[in-house]
Amino acid sequence: MSDFEYPEALDSDLVGTYPTVVSSGAGYFFDDVLEYRVWCYMRDGAKDMADGDDYYYPFETFETAAEFADETKGAQLPFALVRQYEWIDEYEPGKFRHETGERIAEWPAECLEGRERQEGSIETFFKELKA
Image 1 (tube, rainbow, N blue to C red):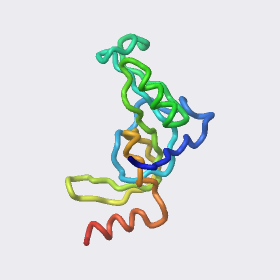
Image 2 (image 1 turned 180 degrees about the vertical axis):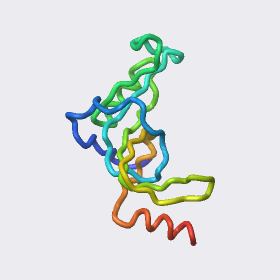
Image 3 (image 1 turned 60 degrees about the horizontal axis):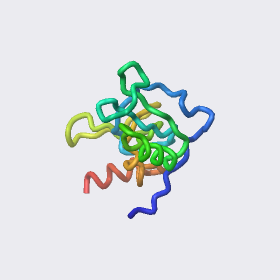
Image 4 (image 1 turned 90 degrees about the vertical axis):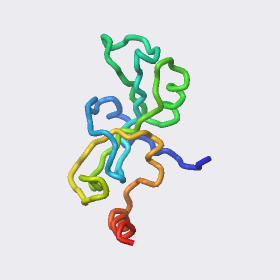
């Protein structure tokens, strides 16, 4: 079992204010965790809280999101809403490029471990790719 400590949301006052529809996955590295989301699906037994649509609850910490998911019928495992200022785009299978800007994406929370961008993370990725 991993000793990974999930980071808390960057700004607790902004949890729940981010757009629902964002990019999905990708990028290999993240800069900030903005919130954790637990999606609820009626097809899996969740209550209808959004006129038949899927919906989510936002949380500041992974632990509270995971606890809610465990206790809620129809809830999925937590996702992390992340912000990326620099990331890696795999624009074709096996072909990568370094991207910059601001990107918000939703990742399965378990994908956070070892992926927080540090100085030199992207350069190291490309060096290892050529090795």
